[in-house]
Image 1 (cartoon, chains in turn brown, cyan, green):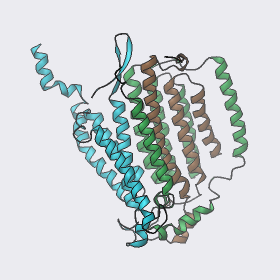
Image 2 (cartoon, one colour):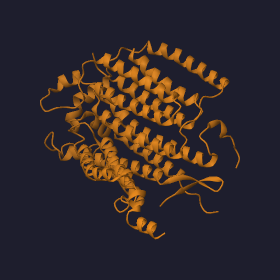
Image 3 (cartoon, rainbow over the protein chains, first blue to last red):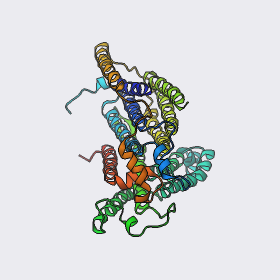
Image 4 (tube, rainbow over the protein chains, first blue to last red):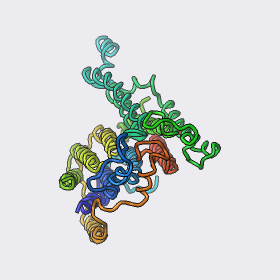
Length: 115
Length: 171
Length: 173
């Protein structure tokens, strides 16, 4: 059931990218899509009643390995969030250039292919 | 004419650059603490939650706080644009060199050669081989990169010049 | 108990995301995106991922700052923004087909929190002896998979280089 809600969030992001005319709303759609995908990756590595994958001095290593959550999806998502920020900054820079050239943020008016 | 010149010489810059006095005073104190917190999260990244990426974004946030509250004139003696580009490149080069040195030192590519040769006591600051060194390299790269992007975005304005829009950069 | 809390937060996140996309005022859209990001960070804490929660909060704040910088200073607060009927209907039909296929795929996934991958057992049992790091996520990204972190550093460098080059002043003619 939680997977269905996570996938609904991804679908809301895709709706924002395809069905909107304002360039800023398209960028917001990309951001929501990014959140949904990171959440899905961390949900795969979850274990019921688990603990965080950080070892303590007083912990036995076999009980730690039996109750900890999966560290591998967390390693993937950690870099993915920072890359998402850099790509958002790149999209915003492109939007600034488009506004300077065409004068509006409306994608149906950005249609001059030459010049 | 004389009154406006006197105003702009003494107090006009206070209103043109940055925010009000209360915000400037608070941000002056807080930015140092945020910087220290970012260094702590980076340095203890192999023992507590955090690491290079979390420390790097927190350090970038402390510099962005100064740019937002004071304007870009206060950050120019400390971290101008050329220096930020050099710090980002330096972080990447430290990462690549320490990962490639592993081949010459006996382990495989990207192997933890410092841990295999000179291992230290557990749960201490210097205990995990070259993981703290890579954490510092990643934190430098992320901090300089995100600060550079924000700086370039904040000095670019689109103004109305004559009939057309034009993008200018205020240096 | 944890699952009910995560369920509630996800429902609020979907409502805030739809409000962000449908609102006519750009400032309230950006504030709704901020709300989605903060709720996501709390969900990460409940899913026992503290590194990710720290990074998500700070990245969320920086995203808000960049978005506000590009929109508010242009005075384009309200704009009409849904496409005309035909492209809108085509996109909605495609999204509906995607939703039906996804529902079938989600039915084949295991339940939340039951199965764990086999390589995770190796990393958790042998991670501390072989690397000496108590934070197993740091040991994974900087010792077992340091090559992937090198690739990530390259992507970050390229994206930032692209953003800086796009905003360069035009050369004099």
